[in-house]
Image (cartoon, rainbow, N blue to C red; front, side, top):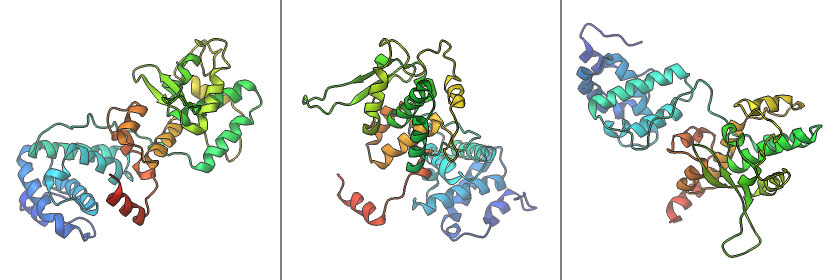
Length: 317
């Protein structure tokens, strides 16, 4: 722990060195010390506190090949990346503490507003981890093996809407059978996509991923009317716990992961990123307002081979 020494905050700024003196520190130390010394009179934090957090941010930026410039490290967007990726190993309280200090440091030096919207709310739980391919197969096998039509259809609806369209529980519960439709293609061909009209605050149209479109379209035609609910059509009470209560009734199976709509959505998002869809397409389909929701997934996105990365960087328009 860094303390204010006899020589005062100036001594702390000049003498501070991160634990184990990482190689990158020699490159970034001067810029870190200059930024902290400039901001100190305008913040309530001590020199030691600011040196700790800014040195970690600077080392993270240096490892990513960023220029040695505090104005680039301390953009609101890059602070968010550092908190979500560089601090993923820390607990909620520590990440929130780092964010607060860095934002105050930024305000003292530069001010300004986050161009991409409000920062993502930190959660005490680990960001939803996508299901692996094997886990997806296990979930579908488990759903198809349930003892009643109600359980089989309900789980099929959850899985196809989650893995096929990225819908969360709050969007699945009010969905009606008539909100799922098969649209003709522009050229009049027979390859017709299944489209879901999402209701609520994030209303939008989502084209279902191909492996799930026929399953979803089939479920939509089983209702008595177009106005009946797609998920649990006979449930009168449509509270927020409708999905979790239903899943808890399903017969468990050893080795099958728990079904969570948040993980289904994370799997859908990750598949779109790895398929290299344009970011604007992903954000619109997901009903997101900023890219922060995607930042949380980045630790779970598969790495690209060096040769493939070089080809993409060189050749893709």
